Length: 143
Image 1: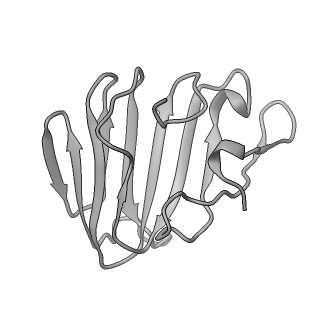
Image 2: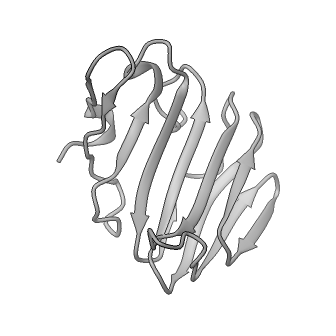
Image 3: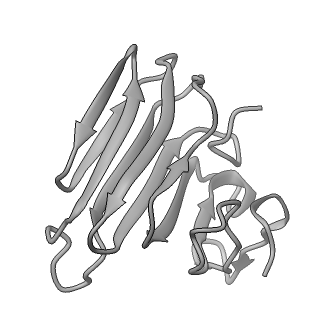
């Protein structure tokens, strides 16, 4: 399985992209991840969104950083029949404060706002992590 920097989704026409799996940089995330790569997939597309299935505690993201674009981080229950069935304890550093959540949610991170790390302290039930942004860059990771 490839890594994000080598990920090549497959374009099937002007508006359809087949998502290919890639391996997380985190050893605790063992399920294949998928990501829409925005303009790298479709030149006119500015949406990049990645999905991960989380089953164990982990610190996601890198040291505190910021982006020149807005970002959304979703944390929802991993049961496909009930995304609200959420059993985890999360801490997110956001704009000078550590936010604690134990419910399905999303964080809106405006451009220029310092954020991370995202610490998944406890996982009672698997959850889905979604990282989204609208920008012409192909990755949410800062350079």
